[in-house]
Image 1 (cartoon, rainbow, N blue to C red):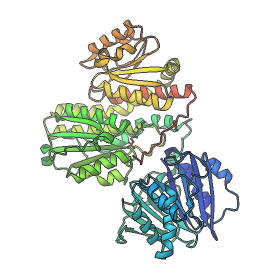
Image 2 (cartoon, helix red, strand yellow):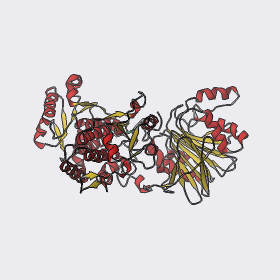
Image 3 (tube, rainbow, N blue to C red):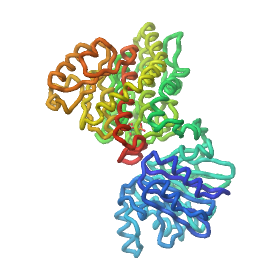
Image 4 (cartoon, rainbow, N blue to C red):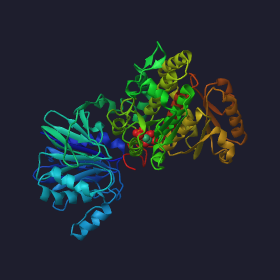
Amino acid sequence: MCGIVAYVGPKDAAPILLEGLQRLEYRGYDSAGLAVVNRGLKVRKVKGRVADLAAAVPARFKGGLGIGHTRWATHGAPSDVNAHPHLDGAERIAVVHNGILENADEIRAKLVADGVDFVSETDTEVLAHLIARAVKETGTLADAVRTALKAVVGTYGIAVVDAERPGEVVVARNGSPIVIGIGEKEMFAASDVAALVRYTRQVVHLEDGELAVLKADGFHTFTMDARETAKVPLTVDWDAGHYDTGGYEHYLLKEINEQPETVARTLRGRIDDRFHIAHLGGLNLTPHETRAFRRVKIIGCGSAYYSGQIGAQLIEELARIPADAEPASEFRYRNPVVEHDTLYVAISQSGETYDTLAAVQELKRKGGRVLGIVNTVGSAIARECDGGIYLHAGPEVSVASTKAFTSTAVAFALLALHFGRVHDLSPADGRRICEGLRRLPEQIREILGREEEIAALARKYADRPSMMFVGRVRGYPVAREGAQKLKEISYVHAEAYPASELKHGPLALIGPDMPTVAVVPDDELLDKNLTTLGEIRARGGQVLMVGHRMAEAKLADDCIVVPKNEVELDPILLTIPLQLFAYHAAVALGRDVDKPRNLAKSVTVE
Ligand code: F6R
C-alpha cells in the first residue's frame, strides 16, 4: 500500500525522504512525491517510481522539514496531479495520507459549494483544504489537524506540514500505521520501520485515534480530544542490512534461502528437552486457562490464512482440540459468534493487515481471547492481541510471503506441542515432535541445495496457461500455498483443490494443457494420493509430484523428493520446493518477482 515518510531536524529533508521512500517501495506504489518547507512549500510529485521522483527533485531543494509519499491509487488514477502531497489553495498546508476517506465526496461537494477549487481526484485533498481552513481559527497545526480529522470518516495515517511553521510536523493514525523514529536532535515518522532503521532504532507506534507533534528536539502524543498520552519507545532489532538483497538477484530468493536460519530463530530458546514441551512466554495463559479452551479458531489473510490451515491441523493432531482456520476478511463481516471457551489466533507477517486487525478488534469488542502470531514487533495486531508468539523471521520485503509462512507453521507446531502436552500428548510424542522441529533447518537447507533441479522443472512447466495443485489433508494447505505463490508472482493461473475433490468437478479440466502439482506426503493417505495420480494421468494430464518416496516417482512425470520428518511437520518442508518452483517460473517468464503487478506487501486498506 502507500508509504509515508516525514523528517524534521537540522539536515536537508529531501535526501532522507527519498531514501525512506525507496525503502517503502516494496509496499506497492504507482506514484511518489515530497514537500519540504523552506520559506514556503516546495513540492515535487511524479507518476512512476521513487527513482523518477529523485530525478525530478532539483539539487537546490533545501529545507529541514518535509514529508514524502509513495502512492497506490485508490481515488483517482495514478498521475502527477493525484500523487501526494496534496495542498490547499494557498499552498500553505501539505498532506500525505494512507488509507481511504469514505465521506470525501460529501465533504468535497460542500467545499466546492463554498468556492474551494480542487485540483486532484483524490480523497486526500479534502484534508488539505479542511486543515487550511481550521488552522486560521485554531492557531496551532495540531488543533487544526484534530478539527479536520473529526470531520472525516475512514482510515488514515497522515503527515502534515504548514509552511508557516517550519519546525514541526503533525502525524495521526486511524487504521493505517504511523511509526515515530527518535533521533539525535531530529525526528522521523513513517508508515513502516523499514524507512527509519537507517537513521534510528528507537521507535514509537501510534495507536488508532492518536496524533503526534514532532519537532527536532522531541515529540508529544495526544488523543483526538487533546488528552496527552504517554509512550515508551521500543528498540527495533532489525537494521538496514536486513533490507538489502544480500547479493541475491531478488529479495524473494534471499528470503527463501534465509529459511534454515529464520526457522531456527522461531525455534530458538522455545524447546524444552526435559519435559518435551514448548516455552512460549508471550502467551499469557496458565495451564488451567489453556485446558479450559474447547476450540481454536485461526484467522489471517492470504498466505497467512493457509499457514493457519496447517496450524489448525497441527493443533487438532497434537492437542486433540477442534481447530479450524478462516480468512479474517470473511470472518469479520459475518457477525461471528464469539465463544468464551474458544481461543482465537490471528496471524500476520506485517501485523498491519487491515482485515485481520479489524477481525481482532471485533473479537476483542465481543470479549474474545486472541493470541497473535506476528512477525513485526510492536505492530498494530501484536499490540491488540492478549498475547502471542513473535516469529523473529526478520523483515520480509518481497511482496510474496515465504519465510513468514514457514515460521508461522513452525510457531503453530510449538503452540500445538504446548497445548498437546498440557492435554494428553505423551512425553514420547512430545519428544518426537521436539526432535522433528530441531531437524527442520538442516532439512530445509538440503531442499535449497536442489534449487537447480527445481528451477529446471519450473522452466519446463512455466509456459502452461494453467496448473492444478492438489493435496489431501496435510498436503492440501501446502497445495493452496503452492498455487498462491505461482499465481501471484508468475501470473500463471493456478487452482488448488483437495485431491479427494477432483472427481467432484475439476477433473473435467485435466488434460494435456493442465499439468498437476501433486503434494504427496508419505503418510496414511499415500495410497489414496497415488490413486489420484493414476486418475490424472489416465486423462492425459502430466503430474509433478512433490513428496517423499522415490519408488513412487515412476507414477508421475516428474518428481521432487523432499526429506522426511514427522508426519505432522512434513507440510513445512513440502512448501519449500513450491516456493522455488514459483520463483523460477516467474523468472523464466520475466516477471517483476519482488513487486508483482496489482499487489502490495502490506494491505492496510479494506
Ligand atoms: C502472499 C501474501 C499475502 C499475505 C497477506 C497477509 O504471498 O504475501 O497473501 O500473506 O496479505 O499479510 P500479513 O501476513 O502481513 O497479514
